[in-house]
Image 1 (cartoon, rainbow, N blue to C red):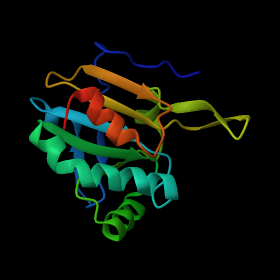
Image 2: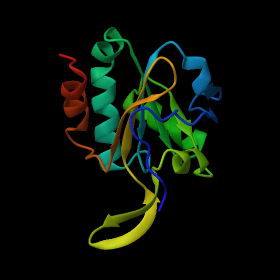
Image 3: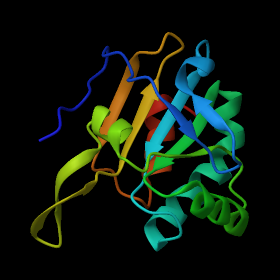
Length: 156
């Protein structure tokens, strides 16, 4: 079982390719609060719903000082298709070898349809301006999670 992060832990650093061909480095976001959300697969119904919820809430999240980044094991080309198809307006990063997902405790054993499988654990991490985990939410639901996160963070 992958070890899970808790509030106060340093957020594991990463530099990963993005949906637009660039790279994104967590360290470059220092000084800003970051919502890093983990989803299993681009262009699936639940992941699309979640991405669109973040897209639709992006203005209020940014107004509250948060940057949003989505991360999955999808290849950058698939992320670009996802971005274009659903007008995603925040960076999507690719962790094809799942090393970053594992470092965050978001890849490992999970329950799916009553069976134990190994895969991506839908999770959200709120990272403070200094690079520490402020909140770690594991096994979140695709639908309704963004609204709950906004409530938890006190964002109208």
